[in-house]
Length: 388
Image (tube, rainbow, N blue to C red; front, side, top):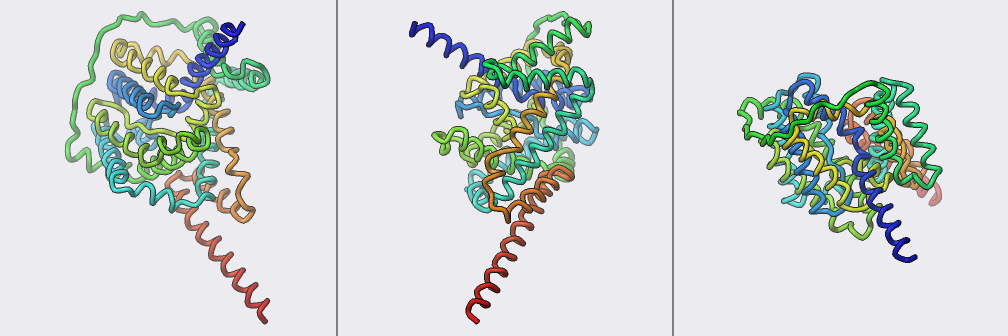
């Protein structure tokens, strides 16, 4: 009896890890597929890079830390603003900056410098961005996205909620193959090793001028500082191990190692961490599963990888992304703040959504300084009136 209960718990945990491993596909698929579709990267280099990065994260942190494309770099590559060489240069520049900031202990100073109200605003804004991106994907095929979202919400009311991501993705894949008439490509395994290609000086110049600072600001706020905060809340016993300095150093070092081999610049993401945790991931097994799959596709099925990934309906993936984004946005931190902080939080979030996270960070810091100044003035006037 005890053995049966133990086996059931083990099976449930494993299913949760598998479900959580694919909970962040809403961020990964659109950007990775977009970069590959426009020819800014090769399937072998991009997927092998994701596989090695995710496996390294699984070994280092032993927690479900997501591996995502750097959004500003990927978006610029998709719209034709970056070549493959310039994308590699971006990964090397940002990787070097992250390693330097971590090595000189500047990450901790940045973490102490950022007020909680600004972090809460960035989290709310990022959650809103994820919701909007998810809904945009879901509306590409409204009935598929609507059914996926409805199924996801209904599964939360059942004992199967831990498997909800896996069930929705499985159902979407089944519909794609059976209902939409798509067919699996003929798979012919063939070992393909990523080739080393170092960027030229002109590529570094273009990357520095076009994407370096916005992406660095995004990575520092969401992938390093906010991810460390959220990880500390979800896994308080691992706060020292999943610290912002370690996240910056490992992300930077891995990008320096992988970018010259055609990897898309990668980082973590607080929203992806919440999504993976929400759908059942609790250990490094989740990124290990994701990384192993990417590595197999990149090394042995590079020629078929784009067609295989394209089998998943993006509308269903968008429903998952919208759900995870809403849960990320409506965090405990949002409701724990003082009423006077609400204006800063909402303003920061609005700018993050309307412009980008880097500008949202600057506006939030200015708003927080102004809030503090006004409060000090108000208290000073109150004291002077009481003395008279």
